Image (cartoon, rainbow, N blue to C red; front, side, top):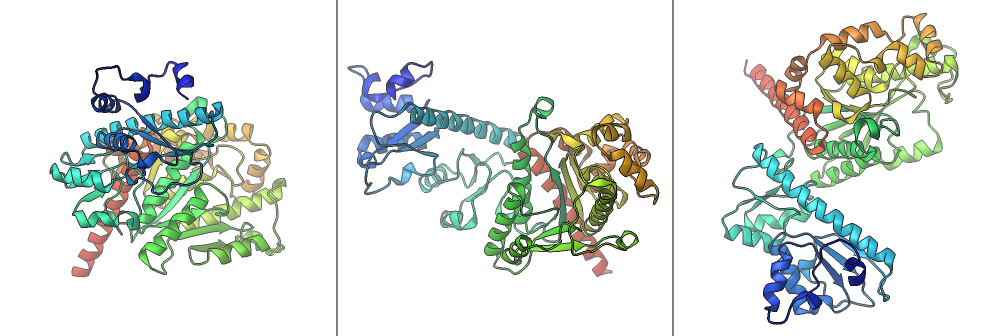
Length: 496
């Protein structure tokens, strides 16, 4: 490994070869560790070696990035406690180490170095924006006992570490030190803060290949979705989602968080609602098994076929969204589901959204935005994540309809859409793009901010920011303001 790194332009320090005669061994090691990322290669005897332990302790003391490399041959009598709480890469104990294993170690090392520096700079920025108190200590990983003791000795009672927050079971030892440890988006005071809120999630992927337009990887939108779900559920909010929750990714993550919340609160309350339009809820063995498995976690709300088109349809038989007639039925059922689920929510969070390839009468996220505005529901528009919401934000800011949300663009880019619109017009159920234009051009950032509990400056930032933490912070800020106003209104009404 030494020879491989030496053949690159990476800076490195190996204590066995880099300390010149006459220099003090311990001083040289400590000096270099203070400005390095430590790679600790763990053999069977590693953690029993004095200098190995000393190097790890030194790196932890000076908040340096550490990568643990597990290459145990047989057995380690005792894992050195200070060597935990860091990324770990497993490699074969065979020698010489393979080039592929060397590359895996170096990739992990570079990524952890970047993550560490990014975390430090981000927390410093959040502190400058008053998210974090000035007297709070900033650390790049979740706190450890030795670290907390040292910080408390220096007078620090509050510690902020990067997202995500630790589950309470892992962090309960902090209470013994009377230290408050939290992330920029979570502390104990937030527990139950959204218990009275029902929040709709209107987030879907953008088309593949959109990176050149948005400069955001598709996983960025997934991380946003997951972080929002985590923080809404952690505050006991109810998440309302329209669609099939059996899919992987964000939707499965919702279930994992809901299970954790249910266990933590020891409650029978259900905090996830899955709204399904017909025919998505038509039962088959897979759906029946799935519902049985998650019946205590997810409340499924089934929406029926609108009465005026239900005649002659066998509701127990699934139909595919193919052909104009079936597409029309699907579009009516999806509209009905969206209207009902939005009626049952207090606010809606919107990001991304496909502009083509949908099954409704217009792009799904666009329809949910329009319905929310018509029903005077607060909406949080995260415009920097591309897709439908980006075009809606552009329209609102420019006071001119963006081309992708015009009827002409939709017909040009969606096969069969012209025929669907023509059929829907017969019953006045078509997507009215003149109305969409009027609604979106007629609303302002000030209007959106006022209804969502944010200042105009905050809402403008919500529209523009591609940073997940900042967007989640602003959404939570608005929702907490709405929740607080709702409680105040109820209290005043009760007093009267």
